[in-house]
Length: 146
Image (cartoon, rainbow, N blue to C red; front, side, top):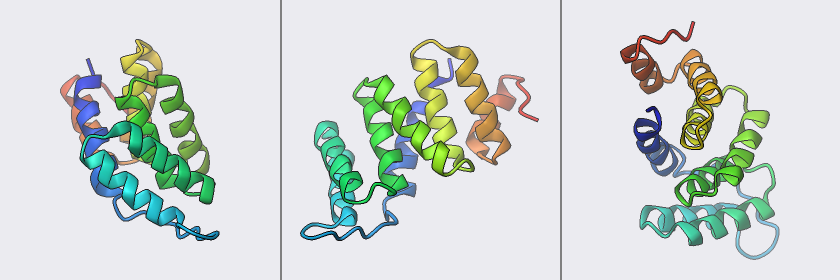
């Protein structure tokens, strides 16, 4: 239903919007940003497991690196680790409740696991926060988000 469309949106969001990262986290050796950038490269190449491992290293270096949680959550989704995807996306939403893409992505996870009610709730929240792709999709289904 909604999952196919938002599956693509989640990938695009993870691999385009957050490519720059936002943290340095240099606690000796490789920085959180360097791990993040390497993870992005692996994700872009389709090596999901290595991307997850590198996002995890970025998070270990900087536990407040919200973009790494977001991207790792998306990678967990692709790896069919839905519980882990939800955990990471919950963390993003907890720290940045205005993160529309986290709601849209978590909605995709809920949709994939068959929880249409939670999926729709997250899609509506993403639309309320201004996610135009989600708004367009809901509008095409005749669903209000106001």
